[in-house]
Length: 330
Image (tube, rainbow, N blue to C red; front, side, top):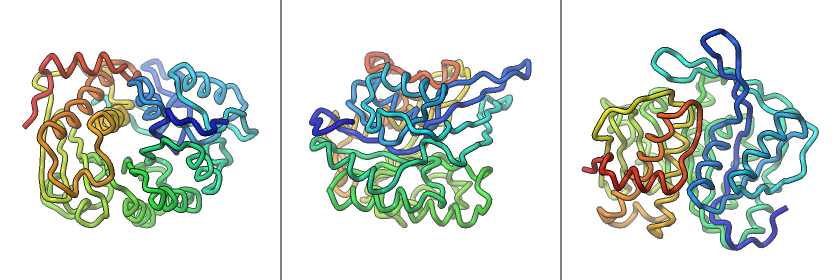
């Protein structure tokens, strides 16, 4: 267990699972994954000391998940395995390269935790600055785990980053799911959302930018990052600023698995490097800071989509992509 490790800056909480990805021949290949798991690896691969808070299974898949985190330098809050089995996701990639998921999540290891445990792990890290969650952790069935933990982190003055990465196809009550996601976003200082997520949330607004502004204005967050696939990304602030960036050329996309997770990792890395905290959008955001946030985030995602599955880039790769001028700002 990690105790009093002042080097750790970010803690992540949420799913770690095995993606069973369908090949063209109909066979499924097991790959380590899960949105929060991918984010955790992506942060650590960009040289951020990161703590993963959820337990992992003692089964074969759980051992693979633990090995993947440890290979990338992630700290495990619960290094000892638990009896529960590993979560599974069956992934079919459509002709456009977008993944479609079916999840198996009952009685699984990454859900075998509690708000008290998550809070205690974070309290053991005096240098902790940012906590991140989202995706399957936004299930209303897990509200007693994550909401009290988020409240405790808010009271402790941590910057809270939430990825509104929705999976409505696996939620039996979509209306309840949407309501819970919006309620959870009230704890966020920084929200990351895609144009597809905005549709799944049934957000009012004529355009994705209008919809994103609605989400931000109806939350307590100071900043919202909106991703729009090949059209780039936008950064909206509480004060009304809107910054935009996109790739200048076409990418050879293998698939988009983990792209949003790598985008968020790049954003968080830039937040730390620029010394930006929970109030970053409540005051004037300097253009250089906004450029760093968007260019690092987009570069991280762009490198990911050119690889099969989620293979997060290391920091030098991201910096080289940004330095090449591939991401236009403004």
